[in-house]
Amino acid sequence: MAAPLPPVSARDYIDAIAQHVSSVCVITTEVDGQRFGLTATAVSSVSADPPRLLVCINKSGLTHDKVLAAGHFCVNVLAEHQDVVAMVFAGMGGARDDRFATGEWTTLKTGAPALVGAAAVFDCVLGETSGQATHTVLFGDVVATSHVKGQDTLLYGVRRFRQMRKVFAGLDDGADDYL
Ligand SMILES: Cc1cc2nc3c(=O)[nH]c(=O)nc-3n(C[C@H](O)[C@H](O)[C@H](O)COP(=O)(O)O)c2cc1C
Image 1 (cartoon, rainbow, N blue to C red):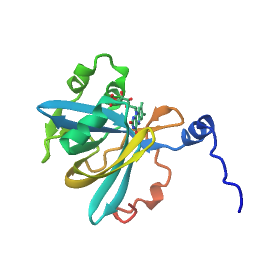
Image 2: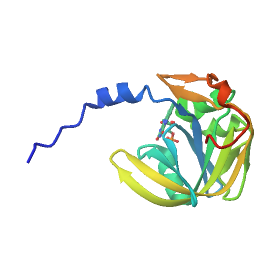
Image 3: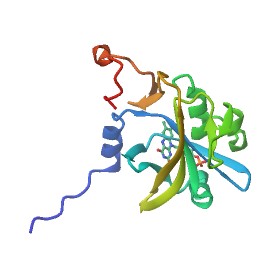
Image 4: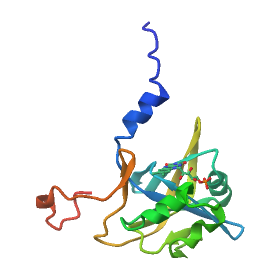
């Protein structure tokens, strides 16, 4: 039997995954009347039927345990002009208590904070979870959405916040089939 292949170093993994560009999201929750949230790019769609997505949250942060306690969370996909919100919820903006002072917030169905003007919002009931070393993968069953049609999203990749640049304009024939 062949010897198992050892994993690459964390450094090599980080340098390579840094090339993977993602939309920037803020994951929020509310528990006992208090709001919590963090900036996250580890977000992915799982399925449309049932409507389900996943987020990966570091166990060492504060919001991780709060989402588990609340049993619900909201994925706010930031619009490209909401980069300040991204920085604040990544902890770059000073005191944690002030995070929700940036941006205008409302709620949809679960009570988790939803960002007004976000490119898209997915309000989720927490489903299954999977512990993965430093992180937990949390599955969310989507119970409400909102979106701003045509709003460009904020991106992060190659170690910078970025804006979208439309290259394949010729494909945009108005059909929604290219999801
Ligand atoms: C661009 C960017 C993407 C991030 N993505 C994630 C992520 O997917 N999951 C995560 O747990 N932390 C992520 N972070 C780090 C958290 O936003 C940061 O540690 C935050 O302060 C945690 O807040 P908390 O202690 O309230 O949980 C990201 C930070 C940045 C700047």
